[in-house]
Length: 420
Image (cartoon, rainbow, N blue to C red):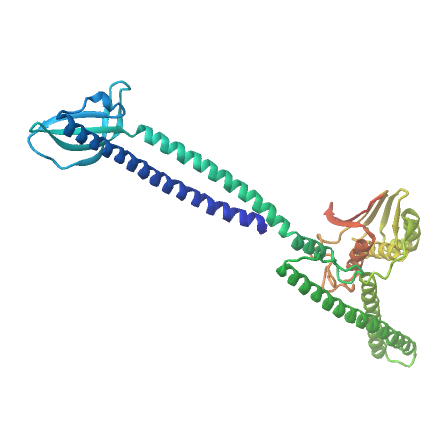
């Protein structure tokens, strides 16, 4: 599963900002250190100028106490030496550790004698100032980035609201339903374009669906009449005593095929009606009474196949279309008998909000991934048209029932649950 756009954007932006933050921190530290060292060098240059001025005025070297911020050292030398500025570590006896100093070394002639003068200024204060400034700046920068990310997230979330509203409307849209998705108005050009495309696609799909629906209904109705005529004529011809055995078998086979085609046509027509929301009438139905009625209808069939029926029925009501509930129970009870083992059992349990129908299995579990697909058959040699459980599924969705299938103790178990 993919990640949300916000999450993806935040990951990329936060990663980029972290790298940028690191680079800026390093560059800022280096530049600030160089600036402060340059300031120290300028201060050392001023001390040099003060020494030169003092000597030219007094013909003597200045006393050390005049330069309390620095350490000054005088050494005799035999000649003039070039001025040097460098960095060095000097041991501090008071703190018992080496400290970093910036040094300026220059020559000065006093009364005909050359002196090498070293002026050293500590960089520890500069380093502390650098760290303080860098940390303070980075904290402020980090705070600004955090505020920027939060504001950006809030703004993006608001900007993308029309998109998510449109997606939620499309999620709830079902082709064939009367309710159309209400797409939000927006002043964002890209989202307006998206909504226009979605509206056009929906209109086109609904028009295609309407044409297909009308064709299916008309075709099913028109096919049903000639099928009924063919069955009637075949039935009359089969009863003709002048037919040979071969002719009679061929006609019976044709009659069975036409009957299957008629049942298939009726099943497809029923599915189309359910999908088109044509069963709008609902009423409160007592399922216990309905099941008692169905059990009486199927008892003869079950007895003939030596199937034992065990029931535990409590009063339970459901608000649904009575015709669809009748079809649902017919399909379930018929399947539980047809797909049962020899001398098998059917167990029916009914409590408020739950119906469970189980029957002993001939073989193995059904394919749960394809169980409710149209034209799915457990065996290619099955006489079923493969639409029974598809109809059951459609009725459940239409009536607000949750359906589950399980295979336990060598039994097919169908469980139906609904709100009470």
